[in-house]
Length: 608
Image 1 (cartoon, rainbow, N blue to C red):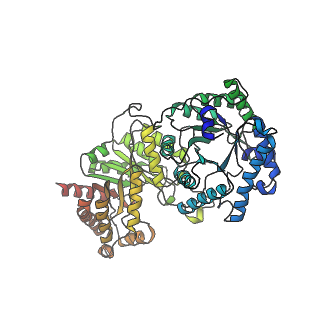
Image 2 (tube, rainbow, N blue to C red):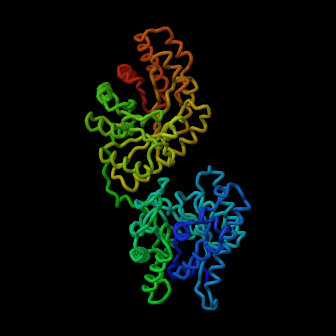
Image 3 (cartoon, rainbow, N blue to C red):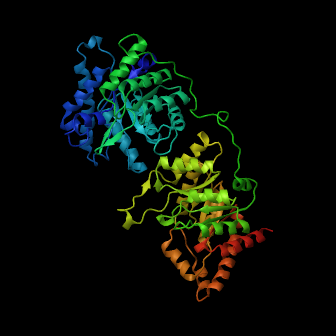
């Protein structure tokens, strides 16, 4: 039977996990379960047969982690592993069908997991190579599972359909209980990407979450229009003796999947931690629904929707973001950066923030552990300043030191405290000499972080964050910076804070940015306090370039004279960049708030 007709009438029951069950069953086996396709295919066949005996009607080939990168570029190894994976599954089906004339319909899915750790071009080539090898091996059904974004699976689906139009393609995503993938993509956006792609036949959710949480997502999300497949983990693991165990009850798992079917799933199965016992329990539940020994009927497919909550479903909390209100009214704003303290004494920092507010600053921006050195947390400081001093804050948020969970937790706290602006930056890497002791965490880059925050704005936060990005006007290839800026804007960035403008080249780049970017631009200004300070920035601070003419102004001058020069030169820069900006981003050197407060007054005087 064609799988499309099958799904119209019957719930398709997939098998469970191969990887975790293989590791549990064959603990002495050294190497990945995919390597067993060639080294010990009998072990893989026996697992397939166990799942078929449990009642599954869809087998995933043992190829989840098999790709050009995992095979280290060995094309022959890759081809043989894929071919063997297909053949072992076919043999298992043949050997369990003692009477082919009365055998149930069983579908074999070419299982393709995510290609991780590759650049865009390499990943695209890897997916196409896998598609070619599976087509060469006779695959008719394809499962792209445990994905974090839709780009490569959708592109590869279109490629497969160009070569085999009748192929059936299921694209499944690994989401946390809140509906987000590890890259920060929301389930509704992923669903919409699949819905809009004619090459993809079904949408799925698998891994990362247990049965109850995926059931809840199925119940509350607006899925429809294409078959939905749900394959949860067997609950959540615990670690014992450096090994991972799943303790959930198969009967509970089956009960939750039965509810998931009632909520709209056309196919169900198991992911990490599940074994034939789980699938047998699900099969019994589905057969009971139908009153037969076959999985029950599929529920009606709901009308296609966006999967996103409508504006009427989300409470509109208004906009209490005074900084953004000023920008929206066309008022010029001044945001001032203060580096957070290196120790536990924040008195000097808070005193400086008060001085800046009194001088006329509209917002305080706070760097997030600049140069990857530990300082007071920028978000905590932003909350304290807003609460105690009463000025809007714009904390920097790096991707370096937080995974997705930590990022969301921090954003929830900022939202509660009334902080409405964030600067999304990738963040400086940990210095190489320390990497063995201090580990960097880079789960995503600044563009992905902006997209994640934007998605939270649309789906969870009553009051949105205004997301800003960095723009390096000192870059040698400014065209690349502009392209990155456009991508950031596509992901929700509303404005940019530029690096300091201290050269003619930076000024010209700023002009170009104003012409080409439809976004708020705050021009960066950092007062130079001495010739030594300028040469240090030129040599050791990425993204800052100081013109030699400016440096010469400071040579041989006293500290007091340098202060006067700093204010004069910075005010002149502000006047030059004014036509190409919506305001200014002033960076405080060495806590010299005396210079910045004078500069703010000079800038305000220029505006009169």
